Length: 190
Image (cartoon, rainbow, N blue to C red; front, side, top):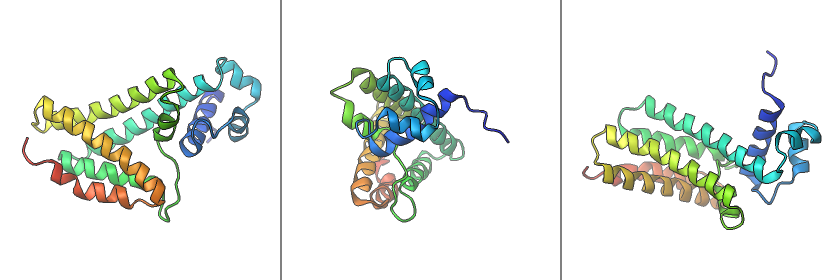
């Protein structure tokens, strides 16, 4: 079956992959062009404002991939605790079976650019907020109060992002796996 992706989609996916692994400042447009095999002129046609514009699209792409993954796990698990545990275990798989980092959603680029690019910071903030909104809805559906649902969603997001950083520095998934294992301890009372 032929690849039906457009040149723009291929550029966004290549940039997203590279930014997740090497960060915003660790990737140049030349590497994105090489990774995508798309001509330089096409990059500037689709992204006339350059790397920052492409980075925002790459963040939005990663956000949508993660949203689909969260929604999928949450749809097959009625119990919010089990759904969250499965979700965190899925995130832990980003580190591969032998601790080999495959890529992170947006944490690397968020940490690098929060003070240097307001548009990128806002795109990252939007991604985190949308992920948290799915957690909030899952908690609300399970009977948790609005305030408790919001608090839990923030804590879960912070645990996942912190677990990603710890797994990154440990070069294995053990921190994320420990978080998944201890998620039930957060759910004492509604």
